[in-house]
Length: 80
Image (cartoon, rainbow, N blue to C red; front, side, top):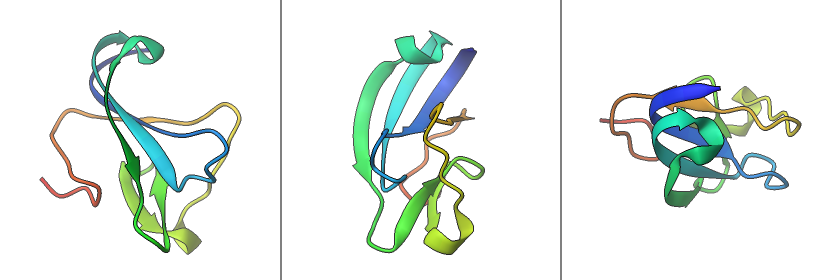
């Protein structure tokens, strides 16, 4: 899949507690890794909102790893 902007993907095997941030244009796997992140305790990465969210609100599906695309700059909680 092609993208333009920021791509966030949960790390496989982390149960959505960790995710990476890639930036660029082109195939998702080719994006430049900007930073790896850990969600704060009690939160998991939510691909529906591109943020860390309460565990009870996140459905973590490991295969294939889901991702989300954001064109803005966000911190771990999705604030600009």
